[in-house]
Image (cartoon, rainbow, N blue to C red; front, side, top):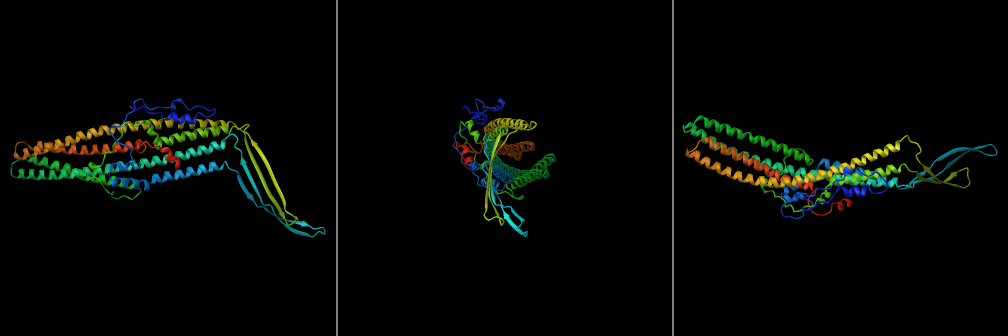
Length: 464
C-alpha cells in the first residue's frame, strides 16, 4: 500500500503561519490513515469526460444536457459572478477615488453708482482621496475576496460534478428498470403458457383444481410486476427530465444495462489525488478567506491614514480672470474607545476561522470515507454480480428440468412453480446488482473529483 500524503496540514501551514496570530485548533489537522486502500486491476488515466468510459453515447449525451440545462448549475454559476463582482469591489478599495464637481452660483453686485447687476459663476474641480493602507487591511480584504471567488468556483464545480454523477447514476437506474420490465414481461409470457397448460390439464382431468389455482395466482403475481416497473420507469424519466431542465418526457436509451462498460481502475491510487475534489478545494479556500478576514479585522485596531486633495477654478462674471484653487490634506483615524466593538468583531472572525478549519477537516475525512466506500463497493458488487450470474444460470437450468418432469408426469406442479420463482428472483437480483456495480463506478468517479488521472486540477482553476 502506498502511504497517503496529509492534506489538511498543507493548507493550514499556508494559512496560519504568517505573523502573530492565534493558531488554528489542533483538532482541525488530520492525515490519511497509514494503510489507505488502493484500487484493483490494471488501467490508465481517464479523460475529463469520465462518463464516456461507460461506452454509451446516450448516457454521455444525457450528462452533457444536464450540465447545460440543470437549474442548480445555473444558480451556482450566478453565485460565481456575484463573488467575482465582490472581488472587483474589494480591489477597487485599493485604488484612489476620483470625482468631479461643477457647482454653479448666481448673485447680485452693486456698482459705484448704486446700480445692481447680476453675476454668474461656477467652480469646476476635481477631488481625490486615497487610503494608504499602511497595515494591509484593504489588501487582506482583497485577498480574502479572491479566496472566496475561488471557493465559489469550486462550489460550482461541486454542483457540476454532483449533477453529472446524478445523471449517470439515474440513467443506470433507468436501464435497470428497463431490464426489470423486460424480465417481467418474459416471465409473464412463460407464466401465460404455464397457465394455459394447467388449464388444459385441469379441464381434461390430468391435474387437480389446486394446480390450476396455483398457476392463476402465479400469473397474477407476475402480471402486477409489469405496471409497477412501468410506473417506476415513468417516474425515473420525469426525474431525469427535471435534472436536465426539461419538461417531463421520455429519455433516449442507448446500450442495455449488461452491455455498459465497467471502467478500468488503476492500482495504487495515492491519497493526494483527493485534492482534485472541488468540495475539498472549496473548504480549503474558505479557510484561507476566513484566515485573511481575521487578519484584516485585526488590522482595524491600527491607525488608518488617508490622503485627500482637490483642485479647481473659480469662474465668475464678476472676476476679470479665473482663480485657481487647490487643497491637500491628510487624516489619521485611530480607534480610542468603541465599547469593545472591534474586539467582538475580531473574536467573531476567529470563531469563523476555526469553523472553517473544522469544516476542512470534516471534508477531508468525508473524502476518504467516500473513496473507501466506493472502492469496496466496486469490489464486492462485482463479486456478487458474478455469483448471481451463476445462480441465474443454474436456476434457468433447474426450471427447464422441472418443466420437462412436470410435462412428462414425473413431478408435481409445485416443483416447476418453485423453479420459476427462484429464476425470477435471481434475475431481478442480478439486474439490481449490475446496476449497483455500475453506480459504484459513478460514485468512485465522484469521490475522486471526476477521475483518477494525475493531472493537477488547481492549474485549471487558476486559469478560469
